[in-house]
Image (cartoon, rainbow, N blue to C red; front, side, top):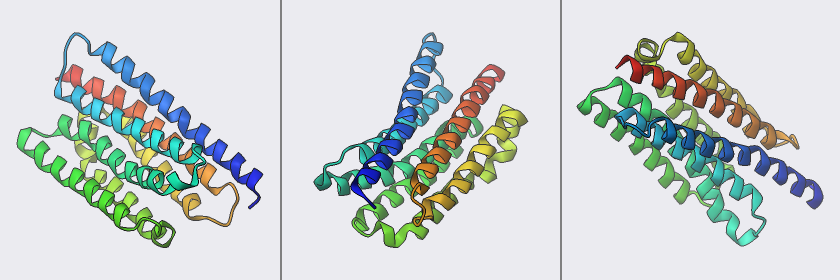
Length: 218
């Protein structure tokens, strides 16, 4: 691949996920304003979720946007590990809305333990990520679709409309992994980024509005 073309692709990758950073920060500010008069466990969960959302897109933007070769390995660890953190962060407000204290703690220990294991996996495979692309993809998908066990509770708490939004977001992520692995096509990673952005925003809107409904019900 020519250097100019590679630079152009990295610019597209950076812009696509830089937009995610902007949307995450904007949502965080709006949530803080909305909850300024009171706080709840769901709001705390939402802050964890939004923080992991921003971290995910910031890590990706920095990795693709900083051209310094010597920094690439470290930034790639940051980029890949942030996916595990984001998945765990996405579960946090959901779990806090569905379970009482003991159940919530146990589920959060499980999901954040998996995120830590994923982070360690990325640390131990530095420089060999391309070799483990298929395994990484399966780990991301598997960790994400544990949420299938939470669907009945989510429908009851948030309603079918918002639950469908979360489900559609998960489907977009899953479909996008096809392009994540299709390394022979020039624009495969840009398209993967767009699927991630679409899935993340779909779930962001569904979770934020759905959880506010749960707060009002409570």
